[in-house]
Image (cartoon, rainbow, N blue to C red; front, side, top):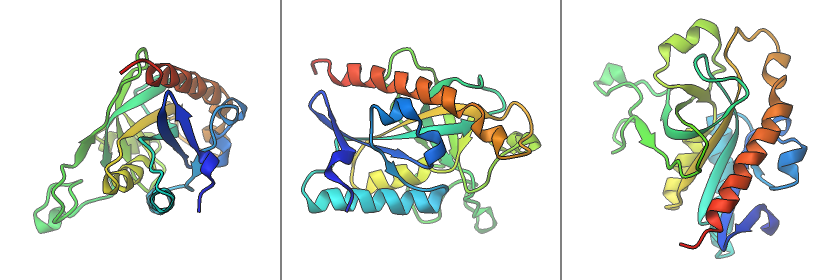
Length: 211
């Protein structure tokens, strides 16, 4: 069971935060939230989010909103900037040999690209692609999205099972040049910790406004 304290109450709204990895969870975010740490990749993210939400059902305390946040790669967006995900797709899904469009899950009535809300003023929006691979260099050319991560699509599918809206916040940590080592991903994470914290402060202000 996830601890009760992991659900934050902001402006009367219950919010569950989800992050993939400890290196993304710096001091600024630690001062604000206690997220579910899902692990890296769509399988771990889907399992952890579904488990967390099931635990919330067991205590009759589902969140009103889930926020997936962390780092992302992009070859076209500003490095070190934070974006709201306006949509998310699953780049691994390819059943085109059976006649399904690439990105569409067979026998599931969903489009390849799923829209997400972008309610936070002042934070730009961008299209997001989730998948199990780390994208680098020329691989970006094959992806129909502005930025890439490994978890948000899976978190969204878990949220849809419980009819809970998802907000995606991603800070661009890499993508301007080829990834060659672990530090190429982590170098900007301390900066993004502060930028993501600022985005959460804006979200808190928004949620505290009268309906």
